[in-house]
Image (cartoon, rainbow, N blue to C red; front, side):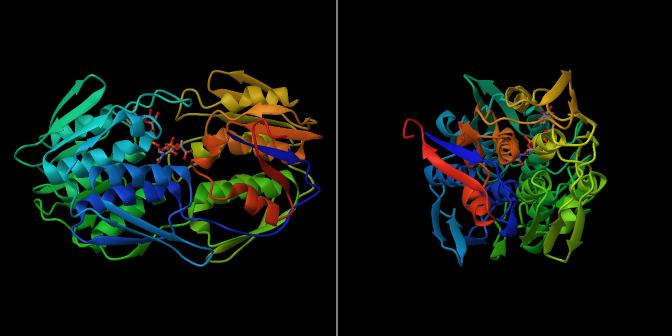
Length: 427
Ligand SMILES: CC(=O)N[C@H]1[C@@H](OP(=O)(O)OP(=O)(O)OC[C@H]2O[C@@H](n3ccc(=O)[nH]c3=O)[C@H](O)[C@@H]2O)O[C@H](CO)[C@@H](O)[C@@H]1O
Ligand SMILES: C=C(OP(=O)(O)O)C(=O)O
C-alpha cells in the first residue's frame, strides 16, 4: 500500500494543468451503454474510479481501450456487444458511482441487476430516489440478497418525476434512463452540477432532445428504445481538483496558475477564497491565484451547485486552520463528512465539532505526524495541512485519494512541493 510523505513547503510557484472531471467522466462512461457505436472520449482523468468503471463495463461485455500519454488521453468504448446485465458486488463495493449503470442498462435491455452500493465513510448515501423514479417510469424493482433487481419488460415510459431531494447521480441515472424511454420525462428538482449539465448537453447533441439543461427542470424526449450514435467529445475540467490546488496556493501563501480549467464552474469556491483574502487573475481557461499574507476566517455552508460544494469542505477546513480568526463550516449534504477533523486535530488544529458544524479556530501551528485518509477529499485536506506543518506528515491509506486525483504528487512536485509517494514498510 502507498502513502504520501510531505515536508513543509516554503512556497509553491508555477502552473498546474487540471485533468478531466472524475464526476463528469463517470456518468459519461455509463452513457456509452446507450450507444450503438464505438464512443471516443477525450480527457478522462487517470484515476482509480475511472479504471473501476471501465472494468465494470468490460465485465458486462464492452470493448474499452485507452491511450494515455502526456499529449493525448483518449478512450474508446464500444458497448455494441454488451450482453451481461449484472453489476456485481465485488466492483460496486469499491465505487458507489457504479449505480450509474442501472438507468442505462435497464433502459436498453429491460432488465438489470446491480449490487446495492451501501454506505461509505461520509454517510449512508441511499439510492431510494433513483429507484423510486425508475418505478415511476414503469420499472418493477425488488431488493434481494443485497442486489437491486429491476425489470421493465415493456420498456420504460416517460413520466413526471419530482425529486424530494436534489441528487447528482440520481439525476444522471434518470436522465440516461429517460433518454431511451418511450415518451417525455420531466425531472423537477434536478441537479444543476456542471457534470450533469455536460451529460445532458452530450445527449442533446446526439439524438435525445433535452430542454431546460442547467436548470432545475429537465424535459427529456426519449427515443423509445432507439440506441444513440454518439460523436467524440472531451470531458470538462475537474472543478474540485482545481479548487484543491487553489487551496494549496492559499494555505502556502503562494502564486499558482491553473491551466485547462473552467473558472465559471468555480464561482462559489473563488468567491470564498476572495473573502479569505486571495486575489485572482482569471481568463476563459486559466486561474491565477495571488498570495495573500493574511488568511481571513470564513463562514461556509455546503449546498448543491451553484452554492459551495461539499467536495471542497475538507480542503477549506484545512485552510481555515491557518486563518487569522474563527471560521464556521457547516456540512449540509452528508451526515458524516468530518472524518478529517480528528486527523487535523492530531496535527494540532483547534477545531470543535458540534453535529454538522465545525468551528475552526485559526492560527494553529500544525505538526507533521502519521495521519490516515478516510475518504477522497479528507485525503487532500491532510495533504494541504502537510504542506504547512512542521516536520514530516505521512498520509496513509491514500487509495482514497487515488480514486479521484490524477497524479496529485507529480502536479504538486512540479510547483515546488516536497511530496513523495512511498510504499508502506519501505522507509
Ligand atoms: C460520483 C459523483 O458525482 N459523486 C458526487 C455526487 O454524489 P451522489 O450523487 O452520490 O450524491 P447525491 O447528490 O445523490 O446526494 C445528495 C444527498 O441526497 C441524499 N440522497 C441521494 C440519493 C438518494 O436516492 N437518496 C438520498 O437520500 C444523499 O444521501 C445526500 O445526502 O454528488 C455529491 C454531492 O454533490 C458529491 O459529494 C459527490 O462527489
Ligand atoms: C464523494 C466523492 O465521490 P463519490 O461520490 O464517488 O464517493 C467526491 O468526489 O468527493
